Length: 175
Image (cartoon, one colour):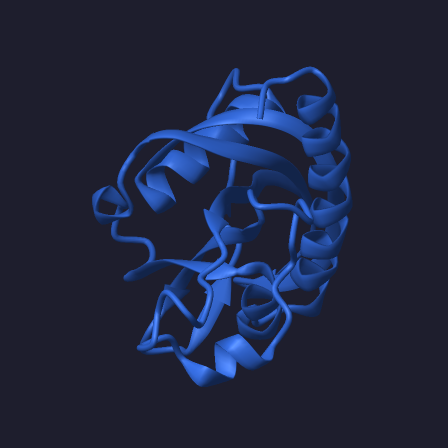
């Protein structure tokens, strides 16, 4: 049986903490290079939100299945809102992943379409109960936390899409 779902990578740009300004910063974090978006005084690190289940030790990108009549884009925005508590704006299509699983003796072939999303409101404390954890991570840390390698690959693709989008925004004077 074929099935599809949609979700995405929700990003935010956070100022890079300098060791001079934050003596309490985690030394491990400081030792690892942050993804700097701009190499000037406005340097920021890209953070992404992940959803998790503490009892199972799972971290994932938010995603879910369509309701009747929804477009794939509508599914992504709704599922991200439900699972993370964040209101988001769709920026761009990133890519898709496919996998198979068996449930109730039926083999499903699933395709998940991922979009780059920007938060425009909401709060992670407002997430539904499907996951008990919703946290922001720097991109490199999110790659390490994700349980499934195919979602790590989506994060790498998202980074490329985001860099192109940010450069376009910068040229347009919007970011």
